[in-house]
Length: 92
Image (tube, rainbow, N blue to C red):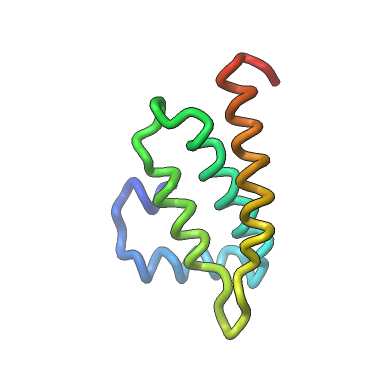
């Protein structure tokens, strides 16, 4: 989210995210899905940096000839949406 809010160079930020993940596209899919899903659950309370961050995480994955696992992204997006809905309703 910091990269999205700071509006840094996109290619540099994506390369840094890829390096931080250490080749773990599953981590990138999880983080992207939770960010996007929680935003969708309650969009009126967020500016939209969450979606930019999710997009950057997706772009950081699937490099080096490996495809990004969009099935995992979809699964984590549902998790983020469910968590966001519970938070919105005051549940834990």
